[in-house]
Every structure is written in structure tokens, then in C-alpha cells.
Image (cartoon, rainbow, N blue to C red):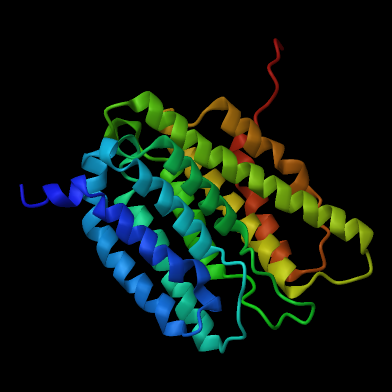
Length: 288
């Protein structure tokens, strides 16, 4: 077999580990071209290597562990740099390319990928779907800040993954558990963001919300509306658990507290989200 040496010598793991070095450093690289070139090479390697790793999971334990760590370090670097707007957009697109790779080569095959790797990716998508770990300064300058397109892509990927048809794999039960993990994690993150915003507003009643915070809250509210709409469609196939519905209903009180907001952007988003609850309102059981 012409690829046997690639398997036995663990070449895919070794190449990934080597590329991890400049990708981990990212904005700390002396030459920015280093991590950018490493990223291009990695994408090409993964497009060829991931199908092989999926087909022989018993030979690639080290590879999956290294890849999960690489995604974490690359997508959420510890350090950042001052950038022009066009560079920010280009780097956000590069990050999005990584998510797209997961969307095409990993998430559609949950029973062919180690469960631990799937769980780590769910955590990363969850983290990216709400906000970037790189925050703005008080004057909304000086760092990358909210990567809205990237956040949207992470959210859409997480939602798509959470609603995957359980019949695609050979182990429907395992697939179903992993899918529920994704949406449960996402809804919990929604609750945390909304609760934090509510607590912050109580402490700073007379201080307008920062532009970044307004964008983040608005994005979460829009995401909630999308989740509910998607769940209502999926419920026809009985793919949504009672626990998930309870989580969605549990968000309702948090949304109500935003109805008195002075922000038109948040006001519009919360209105759309609340309207999605219409089909969930049912009369109490009564004998009369």
C-alpha cells in the first residue's frame, strides 16, 4: 500500500504538531507571513488527511488530540496586534475557513471521530458563537474585538450540528447524545450572556451600554429566535428533547427584562425573539 508508511509513521500527527508551533504563536510571530503560510499548508493537509483519519480512528489518537489543541490556540490566541480594518476582515475570514473545514470534514461524521474531540470542538464553537475572547478597549479600539461574522459562522455550525439527523451514523444513540450536547451547551451560553447583561445594567443604570455589548446582546437575541424557529421545524420529526424545550422556555424571563431597553437594536431583536414563543404558549390542562 502506497500510503502505509504515512499511517505507520504517524506522519499526519507529526506534520500537525510541527505546524502548531507558528499557528500557536500567531500574532506573536516575528514575521506574520509565518503563521499565514502555516495555515495555508495545514488546510491542504487536513483536506487530504481527515478522510484517512476518519477511516482508521484507531491509528490517529495522537493526531486528534493535537488537532483539538491547535484549533483552540489558533482561533483564540492569547495575544493580538494593532490591525487595519482590512487586515481584521482578512484574518476573520481565515478563522472562518477553519470552522468551514470542521463543518465539512468533521461534524457530518460524528461516529467516525473520537467523542472527546467532538466535545472539544463543541466547546470551541460555543465559545466562538457568542463572542471572541479578544475584547475591545473602553473606546472600542485597540484590539480585534467582536468578530461578528466569525461568531455567526460558529453559531450556525453549532446549530446545524445539534440538529444532525441521527440516522447518518452507525450508532444513532451516540450521535444523538453528541448532538444534544451541542444545543444544550449553546442554550446555556445564551442564558449566561443575558444574565450578565442584566446584572451589569442593574449596576450601571444611568450608563449606556458599550457598542460591543449592544452588538453581543443583539446577536444572542437573534440567535435565540433562530434556535426556536429551527426547533419548531425539527419538532415535527420528534428530534427535540423535553430538556431542550425547557431550556428554551427558561430563557423567556430573561428576554422580558430587555423589553424596556433604550437601544433600538436590542429592542428589535428581543421583539423578534419573543414572537417566536407564540407557538409555545398553550392553555393549562383543565377539565372545564
